[in-house]
Length: 124
Image (cartoon, rainbow, N blue to C red; front, side):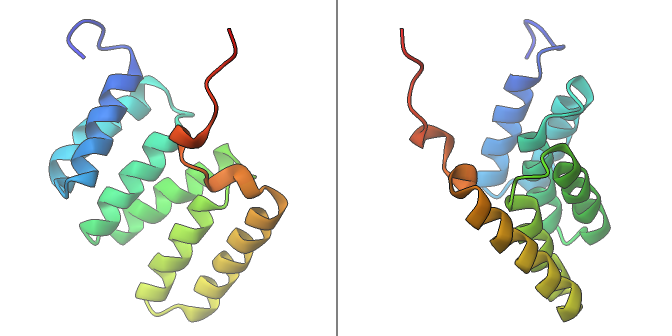
């Protein structure tokens, strides 16, 4: 991060690690910096949304997931997370609609939720 503060990847990786460790408040500035450096960084937006969800900052989480859904219209993950938020907020109709979108996108693109590690290495 210190070597090149314009490069978004280290900020995302560190912020995402903090989210995985349950250190959501600490992750926020790193994930925001990754997005500032690259506005179309969907993985960073999803990770930031998860941190907001853990902190029960629902409007912020919804905003990040809405933006992630715009960035990758084929990805089911933002819709799945939105369905969880709306269910938690008691809006079962909206939760159901988001879940249906997620399920439809998952059927149309089954590899979309695969872990990055599950993807093959590039051929030499």
